[in-house]
Image (cartoon, rainbow, N blue to C red; front, side, top):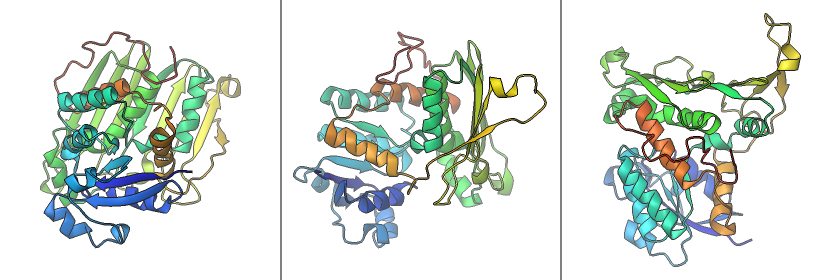
Length: 355
């Protein structure tokens, strides 16, 4: 098996260390050939970390000139991800870009369009797409086992320090932009393009912090309503991250959505109509067996390898990623018409799947 020659630009993203740890550990798939950090602050803070020991540091220009470089991990701070991704695409490199895809939808669309034109894989780093429980739920929904999906309720909470919440102030959408984006992705994947999005983005004001740290968005559909909630002030918020998918024939609960235990990634419960009929005042559900995973990013990076080295088609199309970013920005309170130029309103935007 030929290894993917991969390098990383940026160490400022919260996921940067974890991605580097993953690709180095998966040395059966990847050969890490360099890392670049153009920001002196992040270089000073990160270059001595264990994740980067033994890797050659270089400039972005040197990195993109590495002979036979196959792909780049783009792990800069959030508002520079798209700019850096575009540099890589112009250099003809496949890219894994961390989330979210910036506040400039035109710049992101331009990057995606050029990548599509050059037939370069682009993987956006929404890791919950690869959560085993979520993937199982995708399969059940796609096979029609849940019937017509009419509601998705997604919660992505955490407990940030006051300084971290101050940091959120750089983003117009605050915590919805930073973390809620993961759940907007899942709502879109299950429900498609909404008729309307109503955002609520507020500051709790705790500790005197005025950044948006408590967000809620309502997604209106022809046949139902879905919601995304994200807050950075909830005690044990990480433990209450969850996804509920409701259909006419069954419902799925994934609670918690994620744990930090190596033997248990998440827990999934299914309720089917034939189990609950006539028992509306009972909690009747079946626990589904889920295969634990070895690392948070392992399945995602293994899929990226297949895209780059084996020509696998990305399950999430270029068009899907652009529309997703529009929905995220709308949920953040941006004034944009996400339905403009949408030709197929019922299109699911997923490769290989028809509606």
